[in-house]
Structures are given as C-alpha cells and as structure tokens.
Image (cartoon, rainbow, N blue to C red):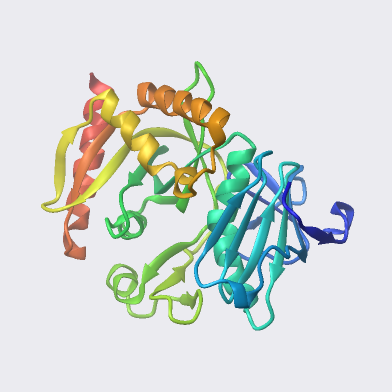
Length: 315
C-alpha cells in the first residue's frame, strides 16, 4: 500500500459530483465537475499527507505503483496524490501551489488511474457526440485531439470529454462513452478562431500554453454509444483508410491511458487489459483520419468522419 494519511472521513466530504459514470465526493470544491447530490460516491477525494517525496527531492513527475495496485503520483511545485484501491484519492498540495493548478493533474492523470482501479477502460483521447453517437479522437501528443474536438463543438457537436475518455465495455453490449466534464484544453488563438474574439478562457497554470474553455449551456451526463474511433494524423483532411481489427487493437493498447505509467498494470492486470483491448477492437470501428494544420479546414476532416460512420451504418 501507499503511505498516505487522510484528514477527515468520507462522511465529512461536502461536495458531491458525477463524472465518467461514477459519483465523486470531495473535501474541496471541484468547479469543473457537475454537482449531483444524488450520486452514490464511488471515489472520495480527501486532503492529507503523502510523504514519499518532498519538493527538494524531485525534478520530474513521479509515478510509483504498490503491489496491491494503489499508486503514488507527484508533480514538482504542485503536490502529491495517493490513489487507493478503496476509492480514496488523497491530495497533498504543497505550499504555494494554486488550488486550480492542483486540480489539473487530479482531474486528468490521477482520476484516470482511479477509474482504471475500478475497472473502467480509459483512453488518452477526446470525444464528442454527433447525432447521438460518440466520436472518439485518438492520437499522439500534438496530433490535434483537443483542437478537432473543439472544432466539432463549434460546429454544433456536444462535448463529451477532453483528455480522458472513459469507455464502458460490457460483453454483449455496445461500448459507451461515459461523459466527463465540460472543459476543453485549447490554445487561445485556436479558441478565438473557432469561438470568436470574445470567447471566455481561464488559465490552467502559469506558463502552460493551453487554457480552459467551457462550452456554454448544460452538460449532459447520459452515456453515449460509440460510433467510431479516429486515429488522427497530420495531413490533408479526410479518411486515409479503415483500420483492420488488429490495428484497432493496437490503437486501443497504444492510446489507453494507463499505459502512460510504466508498470501500472502489473502482470495480472496486463492480461485483463489485453483482453479488454481485444474485445473493444471487435466492437469499435476505427479509421485513420487526416487532420490539417489549418483550423479553417478541420470541418472537412469532420465531414469525412461523419460520412464514414454513415457508410458503416449502411453496410
């Protein structure tokens, strides 16, 4: 187990939310998430101490996994996080770190790992709903996942999630995307091109080029059936090709969130993860999608994606 000590008890956590299909109870406010007082808390966020490292010891992001699967994360200048198997996340925010800065890793990498411990498959991706079906955008860093997601929202799609995509995969049922929270991390010039010069953006932390954009209106937490996944490649807009099942499997493995942490799965977890990716490869249609660097041409790529899904439905 990870050496961490929480302050308070689950009964004393005043804030209750729902995100990624689970109830989240927190000791402090998480304004990015959707309040839901009726949600049964499955994850509990507490403050406390995780004394494995101190600021003087650390120059880079640290991840450690215990034998039972619990894990320790640490960010220089921000703080440390312990993710326990019982659903607790203990946050140790170091002095001087802004609360908003702490929430960035908490609601991204840390929450993705907590979902993994609960058996939820997560992808490092973005997703929108078009015609009540989920489009998942996959790709390496800089491929344009968030920008493509934002362009789709600007064109009328419904945001489901950015950065962490939680997929509920049940045998014999269509995979579902479980909506996260209404935020897209995007650069200012991109946001202004897509949403206008008066777009409202919030700083995530000092020196980080991306800002937070929150689409106006209510955020629907209803799970959405997966239409297709699209592996983004920089280039001329349009479909390069439909991926065969073995390449879909490779994409599920490559872009699953948990593989970002070396050793995070453990030996027994590797087998289960392999099976989950293989199952999803049979259920999810996937394509390679060219996405241009010119923002004004991204709608062409989205049109190609919608056309591919429509063609698949006719087969």
